[in-house]
Image (cartoon, rainbow, N blue to C red; front, side, top):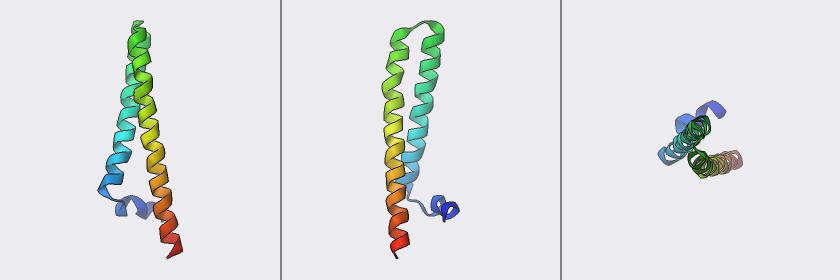
Length: 74
């Protein structure tokens, strides 16, 4: 079941997962660059980017859980 989910997942779910991973990665890179260069503004600006990525990730988990629950009921 878990191996088949990605193959049968909708395009919107896949876009949600990749955008969440991308935002988290961009936020981490901004945080590392901001902290190593001493730019506190950049480091603080990275936190909302990471937060939005995490929210999208949790949304993806909820969508996946609902879809799996629906298939178990059938």
